[in-house]
Amino acid sequence: GVGRAGVVVVAVLAAAVLLIRRYGKQVWRGARSGDIVCTTVLIFLISLVVSKILDRSVNMLADDYGIALPVRLGQLISTTEEAMEAVLPLVAAIGLLQHRRRR
Image 1: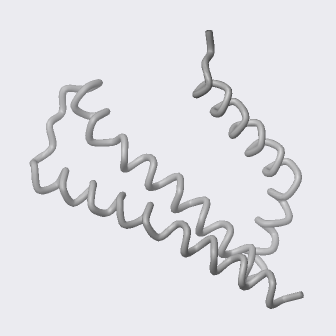
Image 2: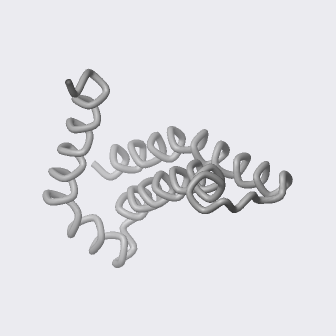
């Protein structure tokens, strides 16, 4: 069976698709025109994607391609990814405050 984790992944992906379809163009246009809330949303999303790529990159390079990065570089990538991930709630909170202030 799919299990709980599979159900959660499908639900998150479905929500992401719906949000992108509903608000994607508006956020993109807003960010391009200098809207601070839209810019914060894009920063959040880009940071989320980059942190996930960094999170998997070291293991993927080693496991899939046989490329072992120097230990220090692996540590730097891991530290950068963790820092980005740790800041995401703060970026989300800033975006929420910006949105509330605008109203």
